[in-house]
Image (cartoon, rainbow, N blue to C red; front, top):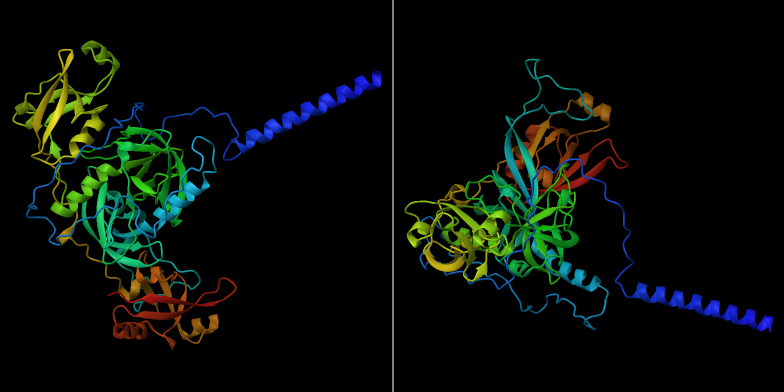
Length: 553
């Protein structure tokens, strides 16, 4: 009897252990991956540099209101190309990557196919933008291994340029097959040269079509055909918690994809220093770093829903908070820049501020929302339509207004002359007023001389060259060569991976023994031709290598 009792207890124990194991295995298979480890978050010692309001309320999720058609006649200062942007939307065209579908709705599935399909769809349409700006010379040129050489009078160094060239890198999104690219204004601001590198590594010189500092949006163009085009989504349909991916070229790591979620909407981070600025950023925790600016924020369908623009950080690098311009706003700006050469934005003529909880209670609003009118400018559309100080604008064309920046974005979608229906909270009840919008007094021209950037002319392909004496050559074991004292950023030599401190031995297999010989050969080279440079350096296992440099057109 005791034996039977012990046997029953043993069997019961085994069944219990098996049941526990079964439950654990079942729960692990019910999720896309193992549950994350949870760690305590240390307290933040000080606020980040960019103060961000705590308002996390999302704009209305209703459909995008129709944007009124622009006048058929462009302005006199509009570009003469006659181009338009054929924004790409669904349905998918043949050959594109379609997002996978859930085989069993309502059950956990492996999410990898969604991310993979979205990345394949967007990556070919995201480019790297390299800009060059002239800066005053701030340092002397040094080389690696030869002593400084005196000039003919025995004093001073060899000839150096009077200006230095500061490089910059960012990202952009191809929005038309014929080469229009959307990016941030701060990526191209002040640039005198723009070079675009595609996903397939082809390179083009770009020109600036137009820019809008108040939204930090710019439109550039390369001369190309049949380019891959990004699919454009609807930023008004986003929801907090939705998966997104950031695509760009952070820290010069080209075609980088990171993932995160939508953390908040309507962020005003006070980063744009313009009188009529519009900041209504999407906040995400997808990793964004310097170089991501101008790149794409996409949903899991691979549709662009934002332009990556800024981060909140104390270190200059990612610390968990990234911000993107909603694509619906960026589209309106790009269309205006192409049609008019500048942004034409609807204008009410009011001073506004956010509604606090105390104000909402005082005027009988059910909750804080809308934009309080603190002032009405005489003679402007708001006054003409009967809007008064103390009114609260709580709707535009039937869509709720949640904050000041939300109202600014909704008005900015319209053109001057459009009639817009506003919902006003006055005397404890809503009323409707129709306003004919004026035009915001924005800056007309933004560093677009003759609508075209003039490329920087680099002497000697962007290299500072120096003769080497026969004695110096013998000490290095060389029979020919001239020293490359400096390579300018974003020059043809830099693009061909020629480095400061190397010795140029030959060009197209012809030995070079003086700077004059090189300049004579370069003068005979045809624009667009490619020169084969044989280079020498004393570092690394192989002292000699070959580089190919294109002669500027």
